[in-house]
Length: 304
Image (cartoon, rainbow, N blue to C red; front, top):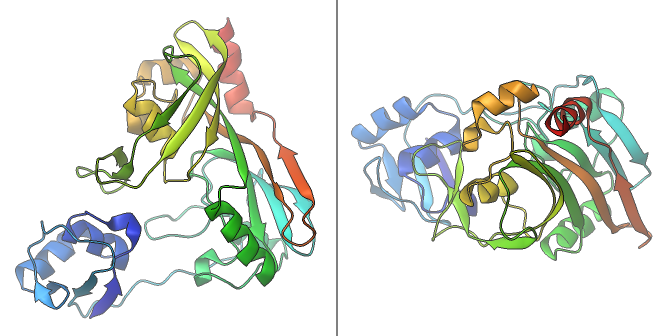
């Protein structure tokens, strides 16, 4: 039996999808459990299509052992440490690396690299997410800060909640956004059709993205994007919702022909600037990262 409260991020999801994400069971296994009356919300059996709410008590009656996550130290090619002190470490994450281990992901992660490199990270947070105060998508490259001290973890988590951390991204999007500079204010939640996707939904969490045009090329536009909130896949979802998906982002509707022409195997999205008050000294810290080689090459090709 697995018992857990539904987190905010799964509010409004189908019970089978929420149970699968929370337990690591396959969707088909959860459906079988539901058919046997073993899927309960607040003590009452529910159908697999029942919509759960954040804070509800979800029970999955199964004798299958719960999957656990562990940080397995392993060095990651291309990972750069750009700042290190007793309170924080700032890394420049390459693409195809997760922030931390998660169910369904077997690739490398930032926390595993730091463990292999001998960094001592704060112990606050779930075991596989210790020290993690922000995340980047697996396919998004760029700057991340992690906490090394317990005080830094608390202070940085609050800074992200208070929106005092400034995060800037460069994004190459299809087409020409109108207006050239603007704000997208649209709530985001889990897509109803795909448990791994996010979508603009009326019942989603408030999400605000600001963008400005840096340069216009044939068929694509280079943007600087600033996040006011930090939802999963936020930039990708918002740009797709206004019909300007990030080049290479096939999950959110990008043109595969264009992606192939530009040699892109991921979304053209890079977290190039990160600034915040140091959690120990209060000093303002600012870091920048250049476009990685694959994105720089794609930019050269669109400029031809």
